Length: 199
Image (tube, rainbow, N blue to C red):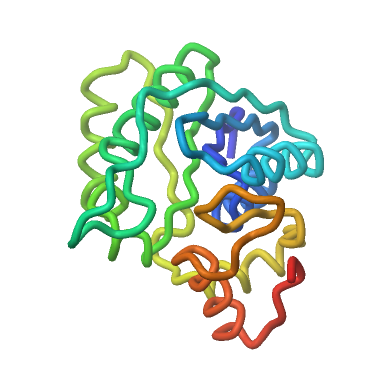
């Protein structure tokens, strides 16, 4: 594909696969990430390792979001307005930088848990972007039809360094192994019939 791509990445395995996918399809990739209260330090460190391995410049900006207070019915990791804020900033930044696409790493399973990660939500966002920008970047979601096991298999084909990624909601020297993110990662590798190289 022509033009540079702006990849939204966190340091987790899904966004790492999206970054490696974009590297194969765009002549240049840049990484945009966001800092907010409660973001694990291990995730930030993983992001920088991934950006170095991908030879991609990374920009980290503060975002005015924070995790919701836990209450019944809310999924772990829910942050009100997160994707609306993140993609609004990304689309504006992409137009200013002349990027051809904004690439995100959301999966089919994300949409089952978070309303702002569903395919219909991103389709509506595309419409807003087209109507509100003079030169809108395309919003590209290459993993949106895949579950996490399929994302891992794709990542292996793309030689993603999964051992450098971080998948844990908690802040610590190592992933806790007990939170919903850790358990989901373990289940995904098991479903894919593989051993997690980060363990």
